[in-house]
Image (cartoon, rainbow, N blue to C red; front, side, top):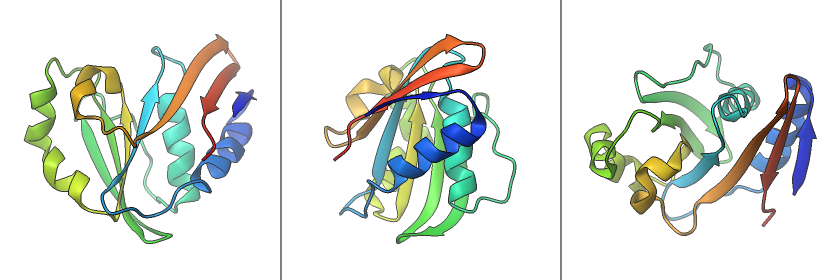
Length: 145
């Protein structure tokens, strides 16, 4: 599906539509967010957080790399937001406990800059593509399955 979003409200509706495609698996659900700086990856994840009941302000984890939020939605217990922008090697993700968090089915992981840790992204990861169109418009695309 390909959408154009011109507002946070529209992004929220797209995020809600995307979330409805998810269900628990044997391992964590990983969502790879792809797009250039300013394409809307963090804004989308913030809208996901609102839908899932995250009360905290969600900021980009660019400098802390990972933020974990408690949720209670469709069996998911944690929303984990990872920003791999500053990572230079896949192995750096292991320092954050990547192996452990990806084993837990109750973890929903949104990962920005997956190309920086490409070898660690499983084949069954969901992928969302973001494109900056103009100051108020973003294109958001994902496969509906």
